[in-house]
Length: 283
Ligand code: BT5
Image 1 (cartoon, protein in one colour):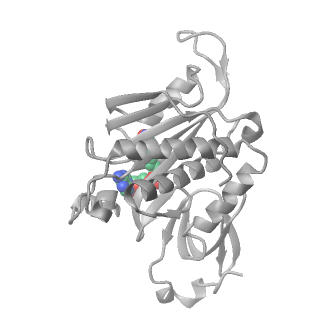
Image 2 (cartoon, helix red, strand yellow):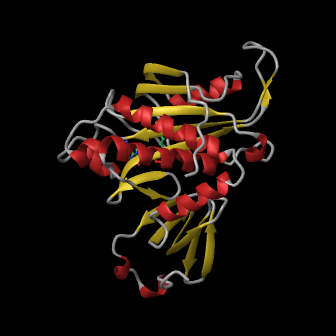
Image 3 (cartoon, protein in one colour):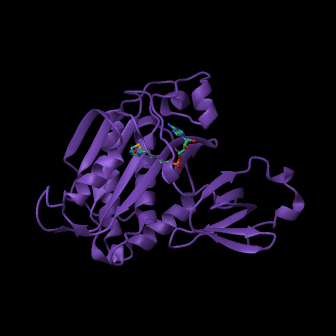
């Protein structure tokens, strides 16, 4: 990455218990809070995943953090910020922090996961807040569009050994991978430092393209045989690339599909798939 030092992210608001750090910052964004505000919780009672799903973590075990970003107009188009670019910035920053702090080098799985050996180490949730007027009860004036990016990173849970709940989720953690407990605050510091660099680079000319290229080379989904669940449909094919807009390109027996949103399962044993569904090597 061509990082130029940008303003540090912060201040950091810390919570022992909150429903969801993303929910908190979405509300703060609508009340006019500035770029860079960070919320960290030891425990979330209603941690959010995508599509109304839940993010699970026992109290005090894992890193649960959200950051409020106010993208420049060039990145927002007008009203709806490019969520994928911010999701990727957080995923890459989290991967760098895992390497520096714990010596773990996770794979990136499209669209929003960090995985190790196909087990989920972390997930990212980006939510857009369209520009609008601040509620009268809170203040006066209007607010610019915002993105709230949330990261759930499994640091000390699941512990090494078997854990039925974690195994049901397919979850792993830095502790499980390294055998040593890892400090959540060190990871937080690393994530925020790398994210600040990445966000300021995203605002530079060519920054989004640089990041998209870096993502393409680090995304373990590319080249894999995958099952895609998109809306109410499911299909299998070989992931052959990621577009600059962050869409996953999948070659299937009936042609190339462009996946804009959805879930992907990396198939473990590509050779055991029915041949008709395997379109062969990516072009
Ligand atoms: C995500 O959603 O992966 C985004 C998770 C973002 C969580 C952070 S925590 C801080 C911030 N505040 C919030 O309220 N949210 C963000 P998705 O791709 O939809 O994955 C959710 C699915 O992952 C669930 O349905 C479970 O199957 C699984 N899951 C839940 N908790 C997990 C965990 N700790 N580790 C691994 N997998 C988990």
